[in-house]
Image (cartoon, rainbow, N blue to C red; front, side, top):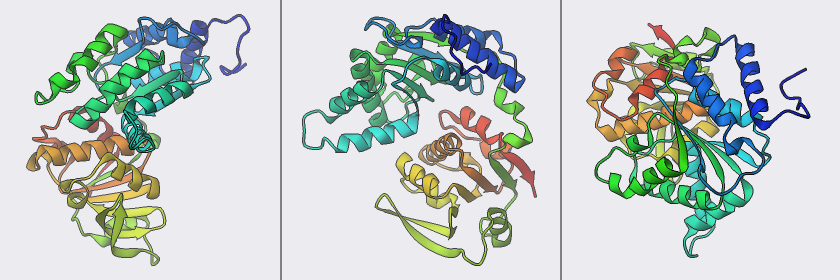
Length: 352
């Protein structure tokens, strides 16, 4: 009997907990106390049932340090929750979708509210992964969107590296996001999930999502072209039109691209640019990485956003750096770098 079979007399909570146990057994894992408490809380939440009332709690907000199993716990819950109209979305993908759907209501009153209500008619359970806010535009969109979704009775589960009070740390616009923080604190069950171990560091060689090579010259065609699998069909020194902005690339071939760090991150780029690139080039090489402390915070933040999206979209990534991963991290003051470093450590580290 598989965990996909539904037991006639099984409660929603029992189904969620059983699925969690099965997935753990399949992977040879044992839940730590924080993970067990988190899944038990989700299993008993209104979001685990087919219907719930529009009252507190409006959802569950799981937070903890990087690699503590927040996404794993949420994914187990999502898979087992007996709700048909459900979605699991990532932070950057959701923002891109939100902005795209708002364009359809251009010229009408309050496009954001219209889109939020449209989402509410299509989705009764929304699992929202990697909730973090570092941009004022993102902050205002998400804050208002959350309010409407709560009012419309959409059940939500969020994961984040931060408690609600730790969101949106930039003092320049923190107060403008405070109503959203208060909404999370008042209407969501806020559940810490931190067992003290970064489980991502247990990744086996088969789970590596790419490589980190150093020290490497930024223009080493033999090394980089060979690792990316470029051949005589490749075209070099091209300019792409990415969301109506030019982007120069070292080389292109079907489904593969070799790009430069400065071109990708030292110029203004959006998350939608990175999503477009990853969708069109599922195998990618980026060369010219140096210590992040040598760059302004906005450059580091673009790199962090790119790694977030690349990891979520399962990009096959080759990073060619001037320095080791430890030295890359030196002086990196960008918020959320701990999460990015945890993901980079899952790359296969290959000194040259």
